Length: 121
Image (cartoon, rainbow, N blue to C red; front, side, top):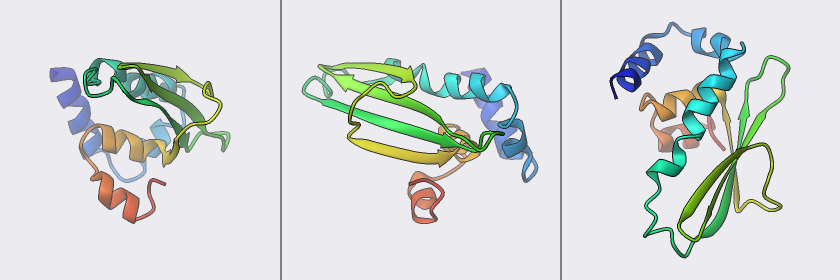
């Protein structure tokens, strides 16, 4: 928890453009994995027992202009996360620039505000 709070503070205090620059380096993969891979631990299995859906995340802002893709699959109360396109048809695709995703994940951006300002789609 302490590490997460320290990371959130570092994100909050980073000068304009620094987070975007950092997320165009090899650090990007570790940061994205640190956001997506723990997701199954936070699923309410009882509430999700009748869910069969996949959310595909397209994370833009790579140094080569491409996007990283992560599929978050929920089925029968279980959650699986995979890097890449594993589901044939995701129920929803969410597109966000990497720095905005990090801000959202660390509580440094409001999801509704980001959506209405076009920072996530």
